[in-house]
Length: 113
Image (cartoon, rainbow, N blue to C red; front, side, top):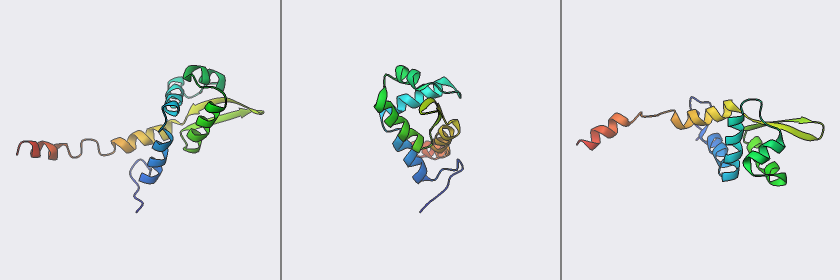
């Protein structure tokens, strides 16, 4: 059963995006890109900051891009910049926090009973 929540993500879509972050290296790449701001970073700089380079970095960027978490721009044959897709990252955050503390009063009532 597909249920859509207020962030616009279905549980299936959210799970897919979280799965893309299921690697320490991919999480590090996204963290560096979020810190870099909306303009992103040249691939070489991104690799230096993450400690990942070459085909390994390209592999991780491909997975993050397929999940919609990273955008890439090209100049000729080279990928010159990659940036975090802040709307998608925020949607994941919203997905996790959508019912924040909704059951807190219920939990408090049971702990006193």
